[in-house]
Amino acid sequence: MILTAGGKTDRGLVRANNEDYLYYSENLGLLVVADGMGGHASGETASRLAAQALRDYFRQNRSLIGDRDASYSATTNRLSAAVQHANRVVYEAARSLPELSGMGTTIAAAVIAENQLSIAHIGDSRVYLVRSGSIEQLTDDHSLVQEQVRQEKITKEEAARSEIKNILTRALGIDAEAKPDLCELTALNGDIVLLCSDGLYNMVSDEKMLEVISSASNAQAACDLLIDAANENGGKDNVSVVVGYLHNKNRYTSWWKFFR
Image (cartoon, helix red, strand yellow):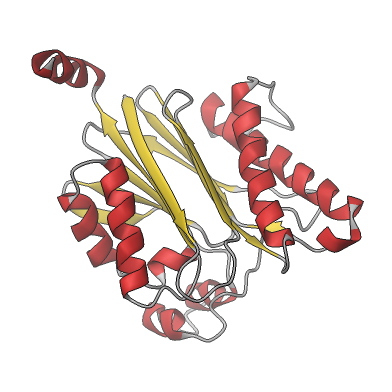
């Protein structure tokens, strides 16, 4: 598969600063969104450190950290190790300076390698898959309201309206060790991967996301339009979006040659 990607982050219309951070690389096949927390500048620091730690882990082709999970591929295990490495980076930074104490971040990351999509996440930043005219959320939020949904104490609709929907049950950098939830699936030609912070999905419905992505001319245009939609609906939080389009290598090469 060939990846073409775009990304955009925005402060929104209410927050004084932007604690989100994103990274994407078509060459590495890596997509990352992080939403920091901690107040002052520490949230910004946590999200930046986490995303950059993932980037550096893949750039440096570091060896696997920790035990390998035989139920997942080598790429997914490597992504898991990268997230655990990022957790240690943020955790140690938080311990090094009093003003950074208690900082943490969500992380949503995806790697496209050959025909496989590998996903790792901690917190409530999400990964979606757009395929064959439908959109599917691939990650489960690590939040208090999502726990209540799983226990059937409240409905998804009630969770979306809850005043405590931003309370996380897991975050990166809070504890010395943190393992992400993992997912992997076979990528198909024409798949679109969407990573976002809660500033998007709390402002824009899944149906609207699908409509915007389906009508966009390219990955970057999709990101721009999604950010616009979040702000048009109130922009109550920082919002970050990374979109990756997956193309079959042979078909993409033929298309490119034709238009040259």
